[in-house]
Amino acid sequence: MAMLINETSSRPRTGAPFEDGGIAVATDDKGKRYVVTLAAGSTLHTHRGAVPHDDIIGQPEGVRVASGNGRMFLVLRPTLAEYIVDLPRITQIIYPKDLGHILMEADPFPGARILEAGMGSGALSLTLLRAIGEKGQLISYEARQDVVNRALRSIRAVMPNTPQHVVRLKDAYEGIEETELDRIVLDLPEPWTLVSSAAEALLPGGILLCFVPTTIQVHRLGEALLDHPWFDQMKTFEVLQRTWHVDYRSVRPDHRMVAHTGFMTVARKCSPKPSRLPPEELAEDAEDAGAEDEGQELDS
Image 1 (spheres, one colour):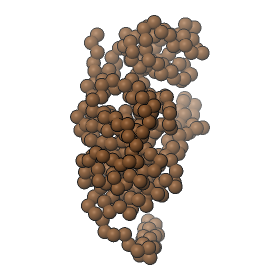
Image 2 (tube, one colour):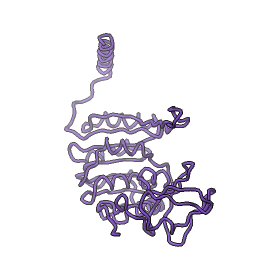
Image 3 (cartoon, one colour):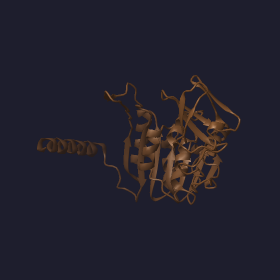
Image 4 (tube, rainbow, N blue to C red):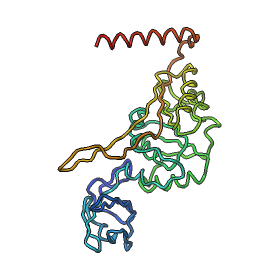
């Protein structure tokens, strides 16, 4: 049977048989997942029995195979979210719940030219590469060679051919050298130091998105964006994800949830905005806004 290949990611099309060297996720009858790289002659060993890789290779996606002691495993190709959660980590990964919103808020599109700083485990790089397609370009700044090596191994396992990905061993805090960028995504501890450099590098209407874990960092970044004349439409948010348990007898929230992982701050490069008002006028504007909100609540 011929393999159907997705030209953008080199990932086999849904339903194509598993290949030697491909990635699979095997789930046992209790829901425990095992992400494996298939190799002829190898075996997945679990506490519910051993599953020979040869029983998976050549089978279509969604196959069920039995372990040596008769326990069943469902085998699928991992989604990007599943793969990312299982990545080896040098630094904290950006979780799938946040990556989904980065795709919406940073708005990477096919053909976009994007710069990211801080490669981490490669999760963000993978997400952006899928979004921009073959005609886009992703430029990754990373100061540590060991981080680059590990991130590239993770990326190559899913996307072996990415000529549109340019990796630069560079400290982003030294400044952004590229120009005419559509988007900039920063996963760095002090993104406020790069606000001016980002403004120079972005095209008009371009988007800057920064991911930071603490409110202190959000505050410093917010001040820098408010003070810069070219950035407008700033907003900051976090994403909380709660799953639910659903079976024949009950529907209830799960006992655990993925709560705070980080804050995302987004701003757009625009024409220069008017100078900031003096502190006393800003205070008056805040009072007026509060009065308007109270009036709307009373009207409703």
